[in-house]
Image 1 (cartoon, rainbow, N blue to C red):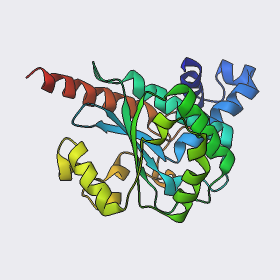
Image 2 (image 1 turned 30 degrees about the horizontal axis):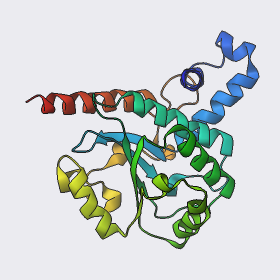
Image 3 (image 1 turned 90 degrees about the horizontal axis):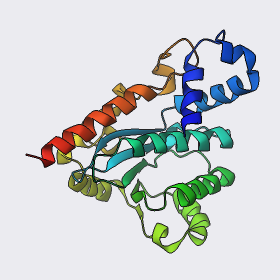
Image 4 (image 1 turned 90 degrees about the vertical axis):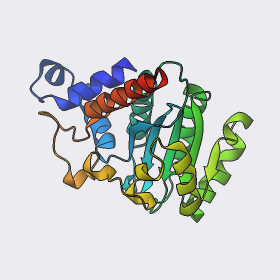
Amino acid sequence: SPDMENLVHLANGPETSPEAVENPARLAKAKALANSLNNASIYWHGVTKEGKPILWIRCGRKPWYPNVESEVNALMLVADAGIKCMPEGVTDFVVVSDSSSCPPPVPSFMINVLKALVRGYPDRLNVLLSAPVSAIIQWVMNLLLPMMPGRLAGKFLLKDVDDAREILKGWLPNGEDDIPTFFGGTVDHDKIFPEEAYSKKQGQGTLKFDYFGMIERLQASAKEWEAKQKE
């Protein structure tokens, strides 16, 4: 939503800006949103062979005690930004989740994420691939599946890492050469989306996550894919 994006700009600016000074509650909301983005646990990077943008989730970077509201806001902000960058003729996206080292699940967060998906993106989500399968992920899915509409429930693939690699080979434009290190490949996502401890502030505020760079790169990937279709 435009308002969420405005909050990112506010969080990236100085705390002496007129808006920050005049509206401390809004600044606090902006900082909470930036804090949820800064762990780089969710980001867009690249498109599939079919031009579907790929939303990567790094579960191990999620906080143990999340601020549920700002985590859900961050997810919706990032999801909306990616949908705006879809190549011409493409209407849905894929999600790939590195589900190793998940923090203990917070049911309220999971349920709010599911509600956001069901309300905002039921036809936008093409498929969600999660690996490896763990007791935590199975617990979460057992909790959420009964709440899901049937068409959404069929979109979740829970696989071990070897199976996930085979699926990614089929999805990614350069096959095996595009598989990230956290799935045993060679592409290092951490250079672009480092863990928070290694990331620097983007502007004068509290935002460390490269939100605007992420959008620029996704737009470039979409344009590149569109150009290939015209060859």
